[in-house]
Image (cartoon, rainbow, N blue to C red; front, side):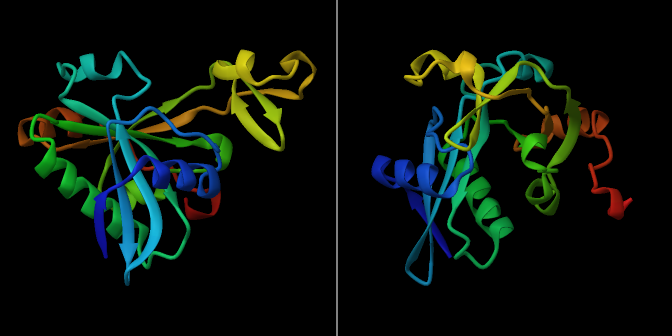
Length: 192
């Protein structure tokens, strides 16, 4: 398995074809994933949507990244191996980055199994905020509703489901703080 810098064309294709959100997030670095010389999709890291999260850790711009998309076609043998390699590449190629963070979407019944498998630290169950609208069979965040080209007020809507927040310290000095915030991993009811 290998990862290399992804082209925008590969990023757009993978995000639109392989990810439930059907959108390309703002990203800083993206990797194409290959296994047995076959392309499997992309992994993207960016500045993140949460402007307050870095302040909890005294981090400034350039010292953190959000894992904001894993858009894979299921042809990879191990998604956790993809994420492990991506983390190593970020650590090597972005030496100022001290922490990674990511979210598992409860609305998609995600608990963050991939983060649990790669030893991320679970820190928060974030309650729902805002509304989602059903557009072309996909629940969409309300942020872009004015650009959809339809009257969003006529679309089915629901309260957003919330997220599970995970962190991954790259700087060893942050490990004690991160571990002090750790909570038990969320499990499915039958796993309890």
